[in-house]
Length: 507
Image 1 (cartoon, rainbow, N blue to C red):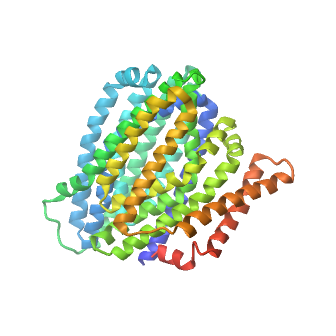
Image 2: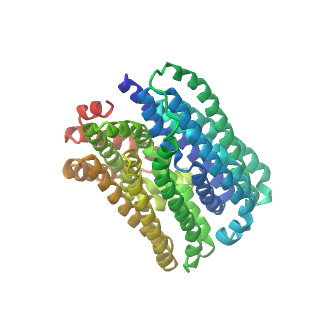
Image 3: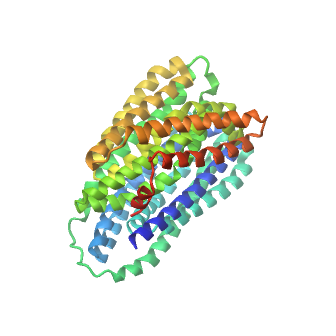
């Protein structure tokens, strides 16, 4: 039964994530065509503040909800489950309302002093009202993950994205002639309304699901210890997220400023920033949908196994997700490298974005492995280590940005991303291997698959182009339908993946 539920949830999360990312890319493509890369750059600046405020609003409590509710459900405690969720919502709302006051009343100061762009003021004020809804939603999503129910989260996020796209489409077209300030405000208004309606959807779904907890017959929850448990899990994660997000916000503010100091960037600095953060990175992360879904589902499973001292399960699950992440990332990194130019032209009609896709493609495996290992480490009570790693990474990036961007511009920032991802991947994967006992085989899981992925992509693209000039769409489709199946076949032939591996992974 557990295996069936896991597979069902994995399918739901993967399908919904694919839909969300596909809709997100279409949305970004349309928005970029409407407001340009400078508009995307302004949006990303405001969005960096949005992420910082959202981090304070959600406060890392979602992970606490997932882990504590999972424990209570294992003990069969309805009373404990509801008390934990209630306390978490109360705590996140208190923090969210403080965040609302800071962002709303400090919008002029933030825009003038930190962002140095007065056009951000309307958007900053609007986004503040989404924070309480975001906090409640994060708690409810953590609850449903602990309940092993992926459907409510998936449906609410799809609904939220559809509402956002519809509202932004209507409002940006309405306020387009009034300038980027109004357009950016329209985008954030769409975000706020979508977030509030998504929260309402989740709350109604929770009220229906709560009735099913009556079947639990375990011990009642004592009235003490809940807040202590929440703080133990949430405080290190929250502190890490607060500091890391604050540092990343500083970084996002510094990037366009220091790019502008480079003599060849000039007025294009904000556009270059928008191309990297708002256009290239979403495309590079698109294939990681399956991995993010699986790592999300594995957090309660690994947390429960670790609590029960089932080291064999923790080791096997960690090895499988690391192997799947590594093997999947190689082929997509190779595809981005050989077809980055065509993909940039196809999606954004921009050779510059294509150049960024090619330039950043070698670090795709590092980004994927870092993201997955960081999530699983939190399920293994390693949130303090994640906090230290993220802070060190952010401080290093800021120092390198101040030094190298005025000297080498965009190429300097690409180099900084290489250093940053190499550092965090090495630290997080190394820590996961140490605490879980997981191992990776250098030959069959790294060197052979990576080499073959690069070779098959180069050979295939040479063969396709030998037949004449094709449209970018046809070229990319042919490249994918040839390279990916051949690569998967190769993995089975050399023993990098076996049927037993797949069967064991979903147990």
